[in-house]
Image 1 (spheres, rainbow, N blue to C red):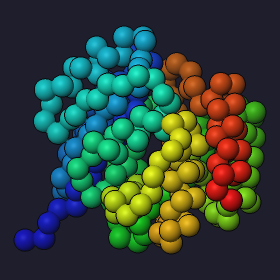
Image 2 (cartoon, one colour):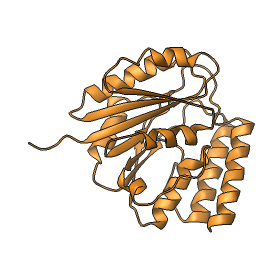
Image 3 (tube, rainbow, N blue to C red):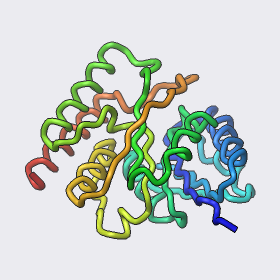
Length: 230
């Protein structure tokens, strides 16, 4: 009998009280609808709003693993998830855009086409003009300086575990970490396949990705990486 593909789904959480239960249930329902083996790792990145209580409701669910850490940023949370993962394919999912059958199906259908599957958002829902411009500029700058012609460095990616086993070392803890992996993977001649997916509009709360603190950290990480690695 042919082995089922096996996935680790990493969900980083920082102050998402009230959205976690629906998000995790949506992703779990999607995973259960496919003929796969899976584990879902929830990484609590030092939440201070009571998110931990909501997360712990899933502690007895088979296939779910909960990790708690000090706040370090979305990149550091994904990194912790990767280090504690056990399966062949590793995918991270934001709380505010859980896995739907359509989105996960796009990854599932494209398995084997490349070492890293890179999805990009057809439409950036809930983005202001400033946020859209910042995202456009960031993608253009990363592509220009590092020769990566990808449309979206900060959305849902799927990694074959071998890219970490064979030498990619994650150094950054913020949003830039997502681009860092892709830049290093290109330099190590790993392959990419890119495709569009739908984005679910955030139902409440405020994303921290567009905050001044997050933008400043991303800019500093980019400059530090460029000066050290180019």
